[in-house]
Image (cartoon, rainbow, N blue to C red; front, side, top):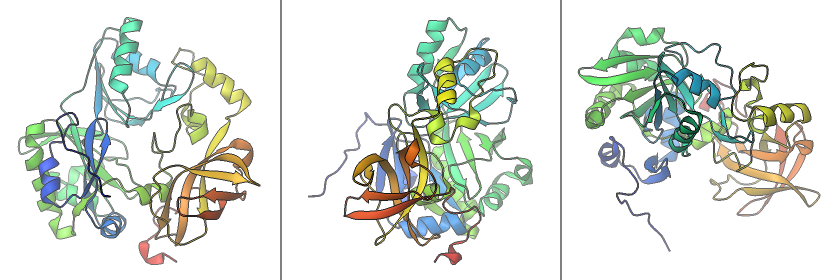
Length: 378
């Protein structure tokens, strides 16, 4: 029997909510206690737009945690194991956050807006509460808040053309992860060359939620000539590209080393940070698990509702965290969190899917190389 999730006031709606409804949104997920559009009823068209054209995504559920005050930079450095020696105003950085046992609790993008003002653009977990608690316990001279900021993503190979038409050719000068504050006819924005895909694009951080409908319509109008259409962070493309999804690809005790973020851990830093000693120990002993790419046989699979058990000779070795059928690879693919001793490329796997059993194998990532066109699908 079909079931529904009631749209009530306890789960917030984005400034673009009514626009997404008008443009045919059919499915939502709940992300950071907000409704996040995930489909507009034609997944194949949404995927194709992202790979070959341009799409616009309501990603306002990607909330910001603002850290502002005299100790803002010192607190940010304490929160992440990444060495922020390259932290400069106007350049975003991907920064894992860990708890005191070295477990990954979020993987936000850090946006340094000023010497005393930073945003953490977060994945789905209560980072606002965490940062407030750490700041209070440590006596940091800061104010922690959730600012009025709601990102709208423009993604795909034609995204730059759309944003140039919208804001001017200066956006071509933005390097990857760099950002700049601007305004579009009175709509305040922070524009970043970023987004949760490997197809290129921008995130328009709207800084006045009353302007949400106007910004949506302006982007839609500017993109019409390029065939823009609505979409959402695409689960197939992100698996093909090997983009980490915190909470989907991770478990409660997962560490950065287990999901390929070891290169971002600055263990030679002289200053302290949360989780430092446990991470040093793990670097010496090696991680217990590894997130790997897999391919497997069978008819094209649908998105899994639960992690799928993975075995070797009948013994459990981990779980397939997410699976899908890749149009560009022409087969079933996924990401699996496996015990390290079974994570080597070429390892044969037995996968217990929701619709049957599959034979799989560990393969290199990315599962689909950047730039692979849809026309080359097998």
